[in-house]
Image (cartoon, rainbow, N blue to C red; front, side, top):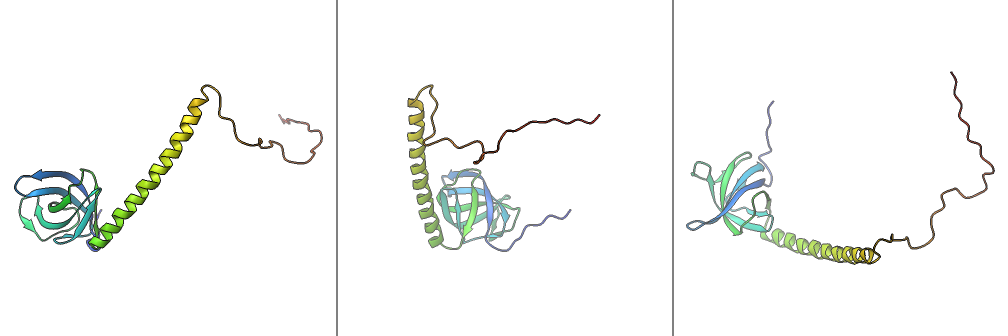
Length: 158
């Protein structure tokens, strides 16, 4: 079985570990899964982002690019990601800013939904052991119209 990833396109990967080195600064070990990670790319991982300043292989040698299935240590993070975050290469810093504004809009909408849910939950708890009744009339269980008398028959042939 010959499994291969696409080395073209924007890079994707997973953060294996992230640390703050007192000599080098913020660095994260990334396993590239798709695409090729190159020096100078803008990458986003969770809440962290940065521009790739330096790529170091697992052996400690400097590399200019990392093809798929290659673990590399990435330096140049402005904000350090968490382990397990998905790393995505974006086309520019403008794209990163747009992603940040979208994230804020999603957080605001989520907070609004959470507040509505809390109010409904408090209303249910205030009723205590009594059930929450539906607002409005019940749905009819039988179809409209007079069906007349009905006879249930069970037929067996043995």
